Each structure stands twice: as structure tokens, then as C-alpha cells.
Length: 245
Image (tube, rainbow, N blue to C red; front, top):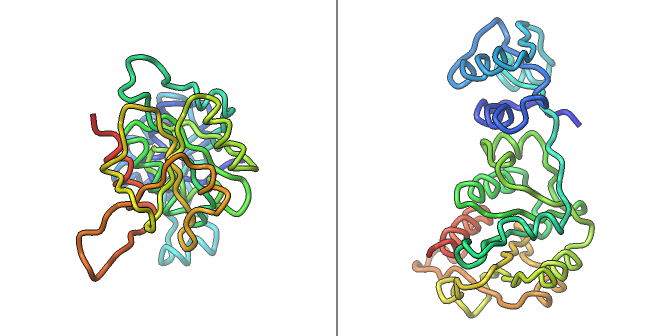
């Protein structure tokens, strides 16, 4: 599948990791604002076609107030197997054995993109996603991730519980996240490889997912007016906390 990416940072990351999968760059009127100048330079370096055209899809033109912006046609990145995902980064030099993520039925592509960006920033080893009842890796995810999808390997599975059991068999510990948990993420030991599972925006982790977890933790609120966080914000905090040495 080919995606139309609108964030130049996402396109630059694709050029860096897999330039042959960037099929074309579209610059309406030849304009290359902001980071698109670097995109155009990369396209020239790799021989990628740059299309200078004012033509645009009517729906896109309406969204952009009568003018379409730059975009690139990029092949979607392929998932890898669970075995490859869980073995990635497992070595004696990895502090605590590393950190992986699993997304349990997240449906907002903006949340998924933000999580990929945080995962890339903190060096998460891989992400397990589900193919059912979940947001696909659309152009929105790539754009919001701002290069994060290129940096973090991922697997797409039909059955999350089986994927979690496979993680246990590979030597990972399963850590669920819930605002109703009794244990704070601050108290989770860092001396083992964790697969952190985050749940749906409204319903959190499913029952079968919770039953598979070795531990469940929460981010303890400090205020009283707001006692929960957006899932992408919460995931960023959890990753940052678990990544501490």
C-alpha cells in the first residue's frame, strides 16, 4: 500500500531508512516550504521524481483553504515477525533487558502516531499491534509519529493474548497499565525486560489482556481535579519512567 505523507520529517526518515520506497514527491507550484527543501534535496540525491503541479484532489484543496500542500508517495513499512521483534535488542549490554510495547485496541491514529514518536525517542525495542478493532498504520500515524514509525519495528497480530504469551516464552515480563492499579510505575523494578501494554482510549485494557499481565501499574495523580491522562501522554510518561537507569 502507498501512503501520501504530509509531514516532511516523516518523509526524510523514510529516505534515510528505505529510499527506494519513496516513489515521488509532489510540490505544488514548485514550492518547498520548511523541511520540504531537504525533502527535495533528498529526492534529487536518490533520483526520486519531484512533481511540480497545481492539480489537487478537491477534498484536499477544500481542507487546505483552496491550495494543496506538499506530499510524498511512500510505500508503507512492512511488519516483522514476533520472534524477530522479541529477540531484537536482547543482549547482556541492554540495561534491564530493554522495553517493548503492545497496543490493546487503540483506535485514534493520532494516539498511535504519538506513541510511536515517544517510543522512538526513548529507544523502545518494538511495538505489538492488533489488526482488529484498532487504528491501522495510516498516513496520519506516520505524519504524527514524525519519523517514529521508521525507527521502531512493529508486529501486527490478530490475537493479542497469544502475542503476550509468546513474549513470556521469549523471556519478557508483561506489564499492564491501568488507572485502577494499586502499584505505581515508580515501584516497578527496572532489572528485567518488560513488555508494556496500554489499552483503548475509553475502556482501557481488555479483561483477557489484564489476566495475562505479570504486573499492573498506574501513574499516580498528583492533583485532584484531573485523575486520568490521554493514552498517548500516559504512555510517554510510562516509557520515560521505565527507561530510567
